[in-house]
Length: 167
Image 1 (spheres, rainbow, N blue to C red):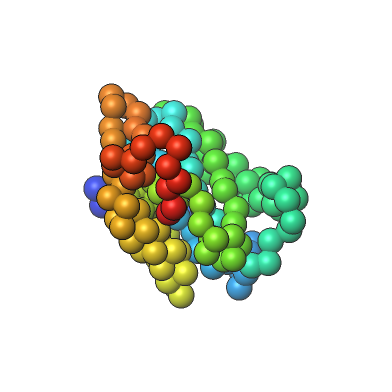
Image 2: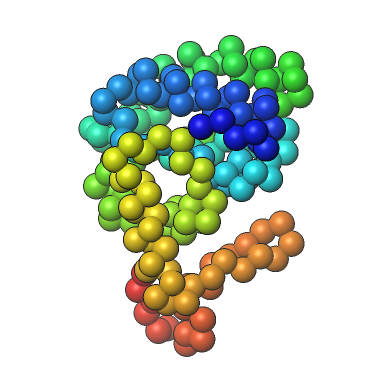
């Protein structure tokens, strides 16, 4: 998993994240990936660590999933403190999905087709979902358009207002 070109403070945090998630979720863990600025390797010292955790089963509802995550977050807090001492003032920013929710698709996957750094996916579940989403975007000619530090997705170039877009 180690990336020699990645800032070491963030690299250590990702290693600890993977270790803690594997320990807590055990055989329930299906996949783990970072995305956003950390996935693009364009983070600042105050960038959040956005990640997708795929597990089965997961509790129903976001708050129940966050409550479960809080145990892992407590385990990881000493490592965030170490990173802060090195000038990295990051926070964890998790999204939780089951394999079924991943298969159903999500706009989150749009960016991940280009930005994800997969940390754990032994069965290729996330890799497969990202490949399928990438194919669906490509069928429409979709592209991510950068404008300064932000971007938007042009999902179907040339579409007319009111015309449905299927991804």
